[in-house]
Each structure stands twice: as structure tokens, then as C-alpha cells.
Length: 206
Image 1 (cartoon, rainbow, N blue to C red):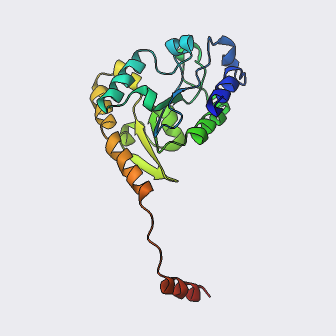
Image 2: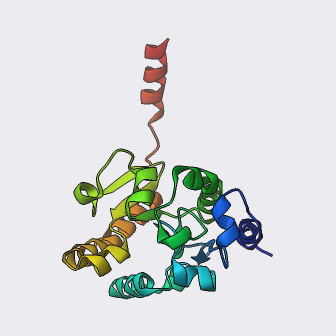
């Protein structure tokens, strides 16, 4: 049994938050255990709660279309949410719920170790781009500890505001080039420092 499967079992019985009493199923996440890209949304909705899978409702259908536009299927990436249980009436996640679920997300990041993290919506964006506005930074990337962080609107935003659909589609099309660049940077080995120069540096330090 994989470490991710064990993690899913732990998430399924987690009752740190009161909302766990009302869920049909926990929604831990799914996808390739060695995925290069992890997509992090906000919270499960009605369809996700029923099936125990992330992004299976209308927003999920749009996400599938977005992935297809860059020649990917969801089996090749990893998809999860900031919180793993549907909030009542699809309300926004509360700070305590996000905090309680953060260790689960951290474990997923540790186990999958993606090269690129794509935040979908403002709640996942706030974790990695603190203090930023999604309207200003969507489609931009930052690198930290060898991982690329890329901010996007949540696919559901296009369902409520058609004007955002084109922006989301355009942002998705940037991902392949960014990922290829990240892979190339990881493969480039630093040139060895010539020994005399290294000695001179050591002498200056003394």
C-alpha cells in the first residue's frame, strides 16, 4: 500500500473540524504519485462530496478541458484542495478549517514532490503568494526552493463570470513552457569551481 493511500485513510477519518459531521465523503485528492504538476483548489463542492473525488462537477469539466488544451489528462497530474471536506452550502473555507487541513496538504506535497504547483483560486493562492491579489498576479510564476508556483483563477470563476474564461485559458497555455524550463534548470549541473580560485576565496575569508 502506498504512502498516499495510507494518507487518504487518515483523511477519511479526520474529525478536527465540525464540518466533518455533515460530509458524505472526504475528498483527499487524486492523480499521479510522481506528478510534475500539482493543482490546488479551494474546497470540495456537492459533486465532489458525493464521489469523494476532486473537481468532478462543472468546474472539474472545465479543468479537464484546460488540461486537454496542453495535452494532459488528470491521470498525469495531481489534483487536490486546500480543505478536504465540503463546507455546508458551499460557503468559503474558514481559517480554522484551512489550518486544520494544512498538515494533510503538506504531506501530499512532501510525498509527490511536484516541480510545479498551480494554485486555483484565492485560498490556495494565499498560501503561497501571501498578501497578493489574484486579479493582479494570475498567470505569473515565482520560484522557491526549486519549485515553481503559478497562480490562476479557479475554474469555477469562469462559470460565474464568462469574461474570465479567456484569461484562465491563456494562463493554462503558459504552463508547458514554464515546466520545461523548470526541468532544464534541474538538469543543468553547476560547473566545478577551479581549485586556485577556491583557495583564494578561502584565504580572503581568513
